[in-house]
Image (cartoon, rainbow, N blue to C red; front, side, top):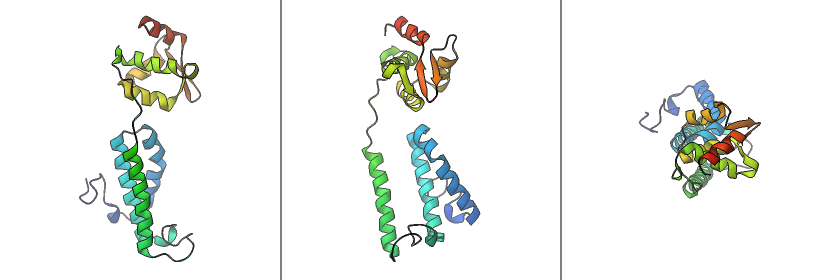
Length: 182
């Protein structure tokens, strides 16, 4: 943990230019994965680190970005640039604070079996199809571990199958729901 940021890794100010650019590139490349699949803690840590790297890059190379004058119309004071950057950060923070988690059926809605709860959610989706990211989110909400989710695809016969980016409830999955009284 770094004392200035509380994050794992070297403080951005201590990185060489090459390391700063490499870590910044990696942070941006992994952003979508963290946003879609990470935990709230991973997302917060990633956001803080990415902002730290971006601010250090801006400090070293202000003319290479829109926050400096690279690409911006007219001259802007350093104070105006900082105000605009802070406004952007506040928008992001506000969006995170205002986010209401999706209502979770939770495992209590379907007894003690989170697999049945997940299968029930997929059955209720349009035609028994659900996007893979929604399936993973629903699995987290009902308390189904990743290994247990994988078994739904690997069972014989499989309870779920993949169809491009969708996950589809099979006849065997519907039979499992019927056995559970769903």
